[in-house]
Image 1 (cartoon, rainbow, N blue to C red):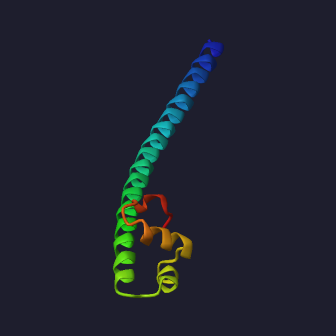
Image 2 (image 1 turned 180 degrees about the vertical axis):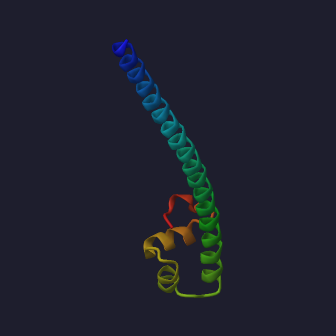
Length: 97
């Protein structure tokens, strides 16, 4: 009888351990899903911000601001600013923020 009681207790402990692990896994999956959604949202925000930056760079160049100053102000390498200005039809998405 004592052996049976101990066996039942071990079975219950095993079940509780697995249920705890399953709950933690589900919480981790939910957190990962939320993080993925946040990453996608931030990536879209970055694409929009790069398009706005592109427009602002072109406006500044059209206003006669020196390209070196534009590069400093937007935090880009001058060569990338020059490419961005010289090829106005290129989408700016490949550039980092």
